[in-house]
Image (cartoon, rainbow, N blue to C red; front, side, top):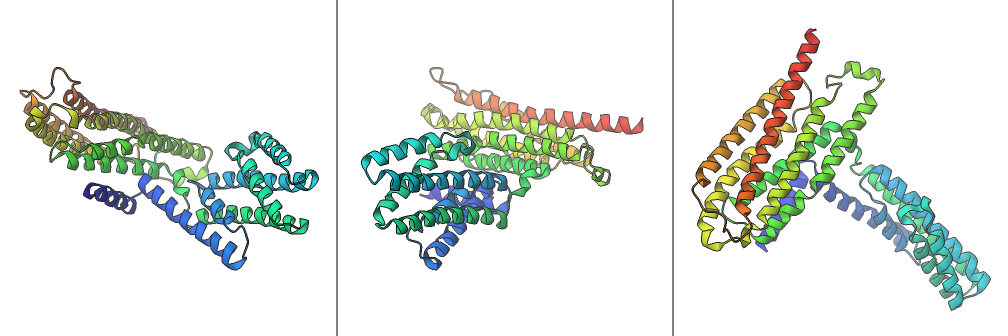
Length: 394
């Protein structure tokens, strides 16, 4: 319980402290609660609708990661639900309430749900037809049945509208368009994970559930890298033929951003391999546990230095940011010294059982690659600065 409480506390701390996937999840949860609650109050308390749950259910589904996704999915979902309701309203009075009618209704609705315009919301045609048919046969009088169907369609549209509006009003996720924001969020999340792993292994071999939690967080980085890369390319596109670029101080080439993203991409992949190795550390030969604890303490020192390099890398926002590149060089030098100390301390130790997978040798290889990736990033950024200075002098 203490371990789980620490993980929850860490998640809340990261969500409140800085931008990143944890904050995005936290905001998505908050917005979903607000959208569903408002939809329920309007549908149940104010309108007194008999099928009031349709509104909050729809609002929950329509709070997406971005505004464009909310609008796109709302349009598709509303279209699918309205088609299903209308289909039930047409076929049920025509064929009568019978098992054969239900079968025909399901067949037609599922065929219509294959329409590519509806995308992943296509199956909702059948769902809407199912609920509409049930409401239709339970309401008795035909006029009441049609009122019930219209009520369902209206509640769906209400839920869609509230989901989109909530996502637009409460912390709208427009920052995904910012290259600087995306890179900073990526580097900060990477720094946090490296720091947490370092603190976790400083006291010895981590528990299995703790190592699994680190691996789960590391597996989220490929999506963040792709998002940051997309944000940079979008920023490049918006600057083309834009006269405002003449008044901006940031680099017009964005090569510095690309260099950082490429480096962080490779670093996150190495970190995923390292965290995967840590999930096997607990199953290593327990007779060598004392040597393992000494190794992990030195390993933690390397990860701490690498975390600082990751933090500084996220602050390099221009190709000519000489001061930040120098700080990155200092951080990578510190990481190299920590790694050499690790190698020196573990040189005479027998860490892996010859009959088992070499877990600790693999961990040492992974952290060496982590350090060298930042060294290479520093060299690439230095070369960019020198090239830029030469071109300006020319």
